[in-house]
Length: 79
Image (cartoon, rainbow, N blue to C red; front, side, top):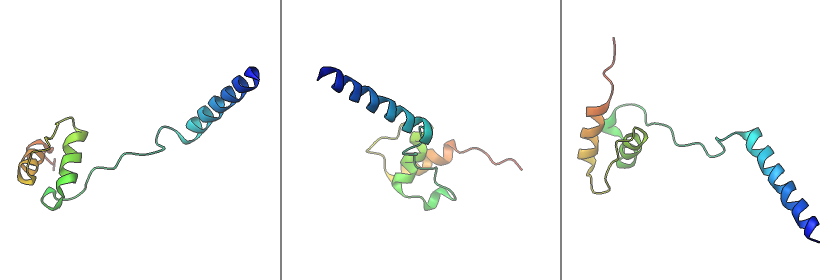
């Protein structure tokens, strides 16, 4: 009985590894960066943008504070 359980566990592990290899690590992809003018972004979009850049937004930050930080950290467009 123990060898049957070990065999089934090993088969499950091989199946899970195969599924991971086929679909890749983006099985649950992260939300993309918000696009457009930061003035129109929601508070959560501002927080997500800052978090993606390891700028660590605080829960207590207001939308205006987040917007100010986003604008200060956006890249200057090259023309």
